Length: 401
Image (cartoon, rainbow, N blue to C red; front, side, top):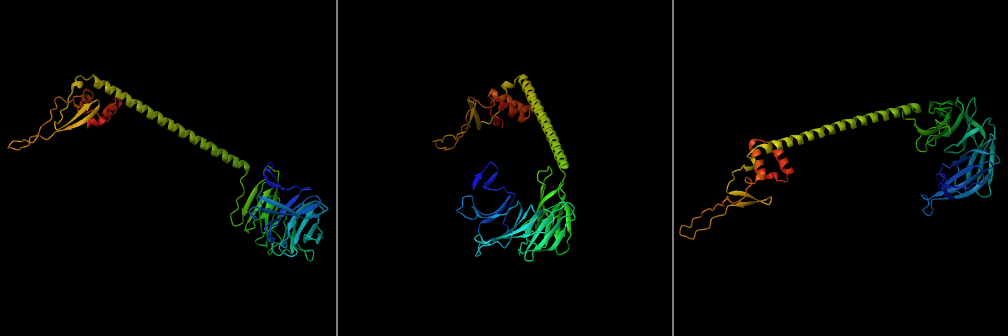
């Protein structure tokens, strides 16, 4: 076992023969590992895969070959029997194969001395699929494919003869599968359709629907839901698809590739047109906002020029109450409050209030930088325009209050 990253596979197994088919055992075998079988030109190899999720002491995956069976002819299909058990004494390995000579071989082994196989003949065409009865394992369904008609035959392994047959009435019949959750259901793909049989009702399919533009290739039931199955298109075709179907849901045929491309192109065109319109509207709104800002700046400059041309604004004074005077010292202001008059030590003991003379204090009204803005307030200039102008000159607009 070695890891191979160049083929996008987690692990690879070296084989001495060509590998034509690989099949995991879908049934419970009584062991924590997973039984796997692969067939080549002359041999069938049975192995055991143990993953790290199943055994904590396994690093990634561990593979072990249990038995190699000589086949003598190329192996086309492998089917595991539910009778396979590794926890019995002796262990039982049971599976069947289909081959290029149109024969079915049933192998039985105890992985020790007993290695037997039986041949079931009588098929007139190539066998494309093998499935054991999921519950009893005493019947085997072989799928036959012909150019004119496709037939599914059920064999009794004890009597070694056919006991039931199903007709697809459509060719080529490429794959069939027995439902593990409901053994009365059989599914297959023929031509570009999938077909469903209820073997208790009729030998002809009760449900048939087209699913692929080209020939359908493979049919597989879900192991947990009897209404769920998957189909694939023929490998190598441009229209090859993998589809999952649910019998309980309305089946909608797949959209053709040309229509899908047309819908995608239309979506892209509409999206690009919307983004172009949106960006154009945003640019227009930003341009309009920039123009309005320029107009406001121009108006403020004109207003400033007009106010500067008015004579006498530099000497405008504003009367201020002598009880609360705000002084200006280097651009900062301190508020001087009136002090209580000193208590008279004479017999009258009356209190006299002394007022701070404001004649020698520089007030806001007397400051030439603020006087003209106070005059603007008196003549009705908008306060917001005055505040913006004061901020631009580095003055405190709150002193207008």
